[in-house]
Image (cartoon, rainbow, N blue to C red):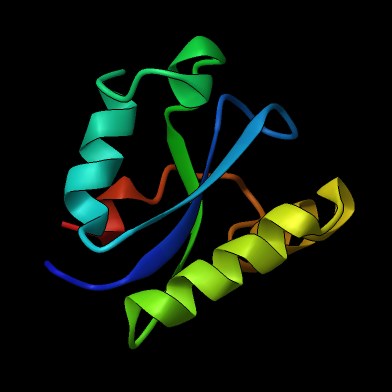
Length: 95
């Protein structure tokens, strides 16, 4: 599945949140879940895909990622809670 996407991973409900962008959501989600992505997400155990948003172009996705990263934690929590109030792992919805 090649589809520009902005996503958020968390280590638990209301825990540490990682925001990223990719053109291949299933592959990137797998990498995060398995700890193959070195850095922030693996350091803090962000393995639950709790939110994602598909875009028409990678430019649109990058713009949205910057908007989300520049926003407050409260805004990130609101995005997650609106789409996924139970903080379920959404990985299965990608494959």
